Image (cartoon, rainbow, N blue to C red; front, side, top):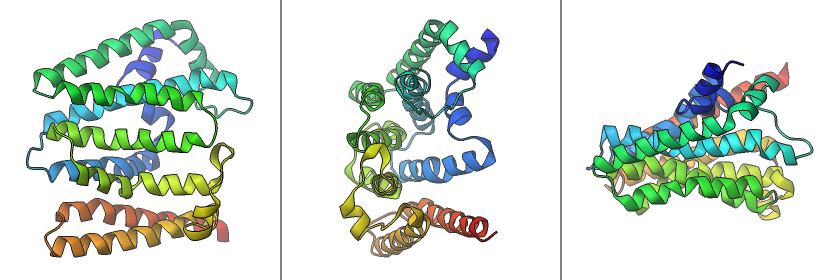
Length: 267
């Protein structure tokens, strides 16, 4: 791999995430439904919403997130016996040859985005708070046991709330609560039942999700109840109708996934 291609892969903001985690139209669609739309509609419902702060907030948190991805895909795999390989041998070789340069470019990019956010009036406390995404990710890549599920939940919450809080230039409880239940908690339940990192929650398996294979039906039931509760909250004036839209999207996506999984199973 040429140096130019390596720079694009390892330093172009948000490209690495889509290259390794959200590949193809299916991956992009999943990212939009599960992440972007919930964050956008919650942020847009705020009276102090800012398009520019939202966009830069998204890039800012992903700068740290992608550094965590890169560490996981290029460094953590060296300590694992059966690692998940998301990069080709050629891409890994490019990383090993130029990783100091890639890291330097990433640092400069992140600093530029941070300075832009600060100049635009973002509170320094918010900048520093979401910069903690990187050390949390480093901890996640270091610890390899059941506690990783909790760390991953924290990471997801930082990724989901960053563009929302940055666009509003303030912290707020209810948007964070909504985003927590919109997707991070469902993935936490599924991973806990699956037995990720050698840990399996017998409590969740008994009362919430009996088996990992039933996760698609679990999502349909979960988001159906969620939509009903949000509609009630909307009609009573407790919540904005904008909160209903992304959850309805998650419900429809869950139905489509469940249907496709059944079609594949019955072939």
